[in-house]
Image (tube, rainbow, N blue to C red; front, side):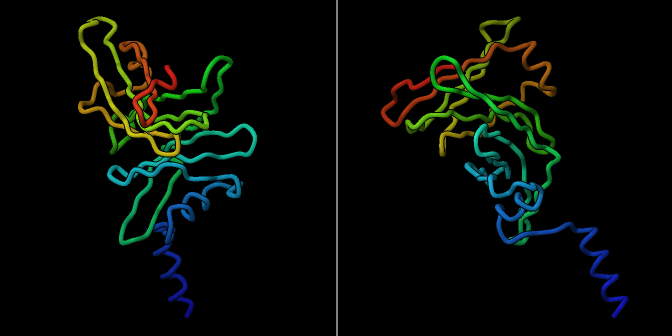
Length: 179
């Protein structure tokens, strides 16, 4: 019996804990899991955005793994931000590079209006004719998108080499917010 328990312990240590749902997996890593709410899941590259907190919500981008119908979650790639705006609709756009995922554009808008698409444009500072445009669908006023081509490796260089702008649209194509 003792060897069986030892074997099970080793298996758990080597494989990590898996959960039936993504919510359970994320909650396992956060102490205040009553305030953690998953708002956007992108299954193709296994990325997600969730909020944490009641009053001043933090928006967190991260990755997960799904294998054999079970979910694993690690805080290793979490990118968390709180944001607000003194004028207009609060609009967050983050550009990061994540191992095994590549360049990621993620963000959110704090509004009661239903946003359906965000367009993000990067213009090369040194070559203004070079630009990268990414149209990203929005769910729950949150978005995760991936440029067609990788254009940076470190977050510090993306902001040194590129000017970024963003526009949020409603279902009728009306501009709701600009970044």
